[in-house]
Image 1 (cartoon, rainbow, N blue to C red):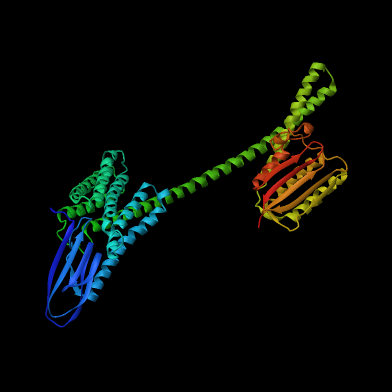
Image 2 (image 1 turned 30 degrees about the horizontal axis):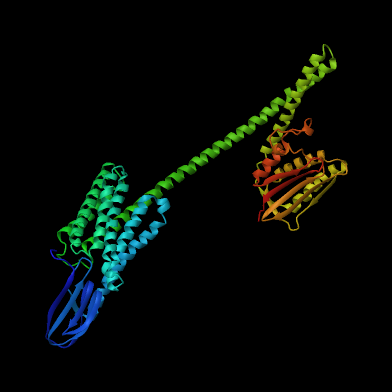
Length: 549
């Protein structure tokens, strides 16, 4: 183009027809500028965008006049030859063309919408594929802008250029990511950003400076060439690095090259092939190619995840068996150790008592040593007893069942009220108003309450009281064991659930495992336990368990 596209033009076409009168239509595609269409001096259509007139064609000569004016954009006059046929044929062709553009617009949008859900988890490939689809959809939307003569249709070419540059940049970015080599991207990144910025500025200046259209065209062609060379370069590197996606990027470069060649060598030499321009076909094929690449890639990732999941399940099963075997071996070891140590520990106690009773050579110094030895022996016996208790607890391996809380409290009362009466302690239970269920092993619940009630009986004087109650709140079961005993000193409260911890009042008789076992059972059943106590004001243990519905 050697002259400015801006200005006015007038076209005259003589229609000669011999035959019977008939209704015909003439379609003037993509008059993106102002136009007025007249037949025999009578104006039949005007506006901007696509033009179409329908009239009764009679025998004789008729003069068709098209007047155009352009103050913005690339084109002047009629860029496409008009098509004349019957009204039904023109409408059918227009419907097919509209359907083709609608499909080319909506399909990439649907792919982009689907891809957007994977942006956070699918990585940069998904993001740039979505951007490519959005840019192509924006580019193809220009058909509807001109078809419906939308506002600012004359200036739509600015967004159209932005969409083209975005498509080219996305193709290069996808090729780089598929080649797994972004280290060399910086050398071309500046050009890929700088040229579009300059071209967009020139696009804005075209309505004011008509010569800017020529500079813009040359820079746009240069940008296409640079992006094509960059895509080929990184596609070749992907092949050398044996990238799995390189076959798709190589095919994309071939499509890009064909579209570029057609655009450079055949520009303005033929009308669109089956409605689409060569670059529009190029963009559509690129979207389809990269969509196929994303589908293959996601399918491959799913297959790899399936293999990894299967391998992980096997490893978890293997490790679980190893841990189970290790725990069984540990239980057996501690059981054997407790059995083997029981005889020598109690034999030591007998030897100490025998030396004391004989009195032979027992002076004050030896008596002190005997006291120390006896204290150590009692500590060993206490811990050995605790170890036996833990072993008994480990042997409980039955399945958990639904246990009614009311029935549980009645069984607790039946098991412990006699012992409480002997010690002149008032023992009572308060079941919940409505029966609820706890999912547990009966034996472990028995051990739990045996330890709590045993401790309460030791701490409660005559005429004292022990109460076991249950209630529900917020979908959880609250079980409480409360006594009116001597209470626990404040400094001991943080340590009472620790293994082998014995309070000052239980040095001689405590094993330090009762409350430790209670805490473990409660935690194992998915519950929590807390204690409220003060010296002289009794102790209250509050346990919360999930309710089995």
